[in-house]
Length: 68
Picture (tube, rainbow, N blue to C red):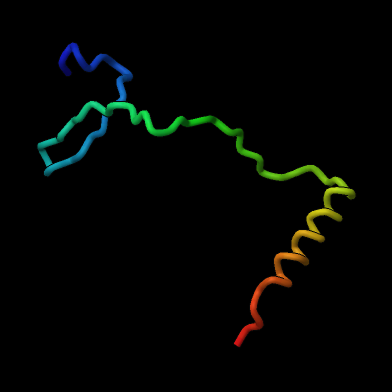
């Protein structure tokens, strides 16, 4: 790789055929920012919050049209 593309640089790689690859430097898009959010597999049990969840679910389903 050229010196302008040091290890761990942001690039996109596209395979053109079995023996050819196209490597492009990925320039940052300034229109938005990325943030890291931890993955939560299961929320803890909380009786008061479960009442709120049930109320939200009842409201959401009351706004749906009747099925045909």
